[in-house]
Length: 167
Image (cartoon, rainbow, N blue to C red; front, side, top):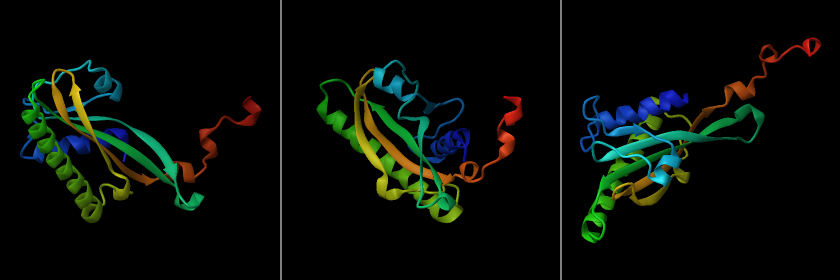
């Protein structure tokens, strides 16, 4: 799975989740950089909003033969709540937690049945409370480790390198 495929996969989940129902006209899914989220430099048109940032990447495995390319997918689930309205903030955070758990459940289902998500490490999924960010947004950020066999790393290809006599 490439970064682009991963983003499209999450966007497709947003299209079928009844609380989100992302469409081209009613956008609820946004590709965002984590720095934008931290700095609060970007707003969204529709809520709840789901953001997906370019994932972090790592490699792990017991041997070179089973090396995995591990994606750390960052998904953030946000909705509005006014500053000082503690009851609404708790309501939003609870609702965003339930939606984020639905996403986790979809990842698990696709891992088990469709083999879309390979290398899902469900023991390492982490959630972080978010908010307030931007203009009174609260919710959850999930980090989901999922990956693929690191085939490009496993197979050395001399064709990817300049010949020594060229140097």
